[in-house]
Length: 310
Image (cartoon, rainbow, N blue to C red):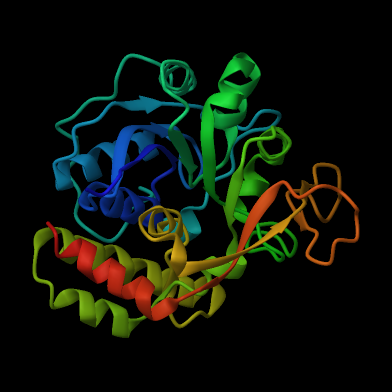
């Protein structure tokens, strides 16, 4: 019998966050304890609405808790240039989801679930790390209860500034709290997520699955591919956040380096940079398993097979 990975998905849907929720829901290896939302790609009100609509689509009935709508020390910055005004532009979505968020803040939900757990819950943040940092600050007793943090963020180069990836840049102070917490971290940064490039060939393949969820994913990817071509001149859209779920399903898809990563919070040009010590120049103990390579063919095979489960 396949053991399930218990996870809390902390996200800011977002096209690739939405795809992560879908993959986690459809695959028997993942047990979603709950979803927490954060402001990032768009406001937290919009990311929550998007998360609820995705739950509706795939028949997922788990608690969805609304979290922080700004960074620890500064106002929220959003990525509507990539994800559109709604955060999920492209497919037609209902004006109002049929599901409602729970009457508990995301930070308190995370704390409660971790404290009552056997230390077997993994946190999977695919947006800014504000909720996770706030939970650690509010209740440090959760820190040893976190099995692992499997996050999308950072890299050895940036996509929002020359130095910084968007998720970390939005709230570098929160990222610093998380990276210095001592919790085991699996980091899926741009170095590896840009290898998970959804091209027109990928969408043609997914169209042949011919179910409602796969068709919805294709619509998401079509929009994402278009914006990545316009903004970055990419020939596809990287499904960044889906790498976290793919890892939970099949860790052998990735290779990792055990390294030290610091978060830059003071630089004029480097704020939000993840300083990845690949050459061990700092002498500091490794604190992150840094994903550096992806088996691309097997990744898309997994993607295809999982969408066929709907």
